[in-house]
Figure (cartoon, rainbow, N blue to C red):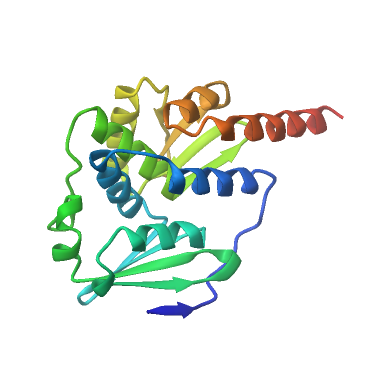
Length: 207
């Protein structure tokens, strides 16, 4: 099923096109089945908005293409998509304990597994789901503190310099480490766009 809705909008910023391109690249990246399974799992687990009602779970994303990509990775008979146009989209999963079991969803918890494939897939999925870019670097919003610590640990396994933040749970990659992080995630082409906008923002700040 496909529906149209009008969710709340946030204020746009100069880095939004880079975040959109990042998501598009992660939808297209070539990866093994093992990595892809964890990529999809983390996209669900780190979705910016998650709600549950009865036998359904709803996962909201800032980009409709991401919602569509997630829905295509799941059994069509149990999955619906809501299209918000420019404001994003949502995936609705019926009977999540059954449908998402192969992706590690167990009793309202996510079990991602271990190893480099898992670390790469989880990192891609979390960045794909909930990343933001600004002149200070890249941040990934996390549902809670344990998920923040999990993401920090799996990124470290990939050799990424990522730190947990205080306040709202987020994982942060400093501006100087963003290029290396994007390269390790397989989307190095996005780095040049990020650097161009970051440098432009820095120049404006000095004028």
